Length: 287
Image 1 (cartoon, helix red, strand yellow):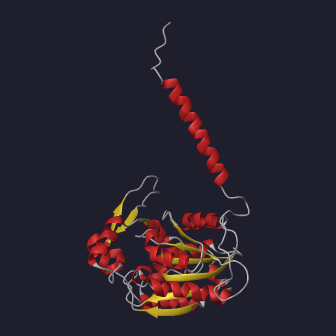
Image 2 (spheres, one colour; image 1 turned 60 degrees about the vertical axis):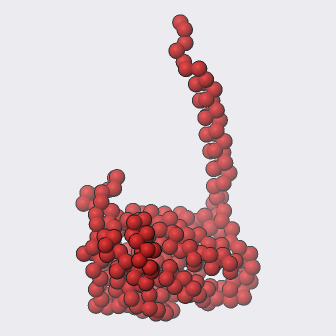
Image 3 (tube, rainbow, N blue to C red; image 1 turned 90 degrees about the horizontal axis):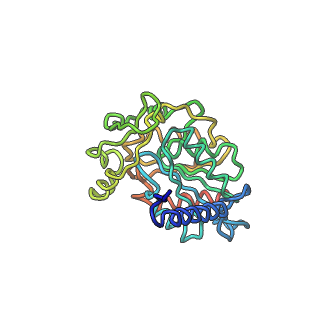
């Protein structure tokens, strides 16, 4: 019987199979060993201690992505720090913390964890029990206590935010019942999130914002890493996303070394030099 196979199909399939095998081999070679593959930069700590500089891991929060850390990352790299701005999945507090926990398991040597906004809740959970994490740095972020949820923390100190009144909900695949992705209504994005950025920049951020699963607002936090790891906290006094009163209360409860600046919620974008300085202070104090 005459074959009906299209001319050239078999060589193409063979080539694709070989290409796939090569790609898988490359990935296998690149995967970290159990000891961790990401090597910190050489040289001493910022404070002059011997040994490698810590790897600085930056964790963004909801309504943002890792690009918000760009200027801080550039500053750290100029200072010789290995830096990783993690892509936070934003699928739920426990899932996001587990993701970060696995990322940290691939890093060899000391680590400084920096969290912005909801990213603070993630580092608070992910760092617990990790002896490599030397310091936690909270940038207008949630430093939750055990059993506390984000909505609970917003009420600390008697502050108030209108964020919940201006969320837009959209479904996402595989969402649990009654869950959805939450976005900030673009019409209110600059006012709530980035008031000290230009209108043009805030409009771009509003259009490109990454949503978070709304269920994360109500998820109780686990044992806090700040109970055993020294922490630093930047309070954004003009924050309309997390009340500054709540930020002060969380910082005090965690025993954090605290600074306050006139900033919107995105202090790492509007005041990157201040955030960089705070990370360097944490390294100097713990190195």
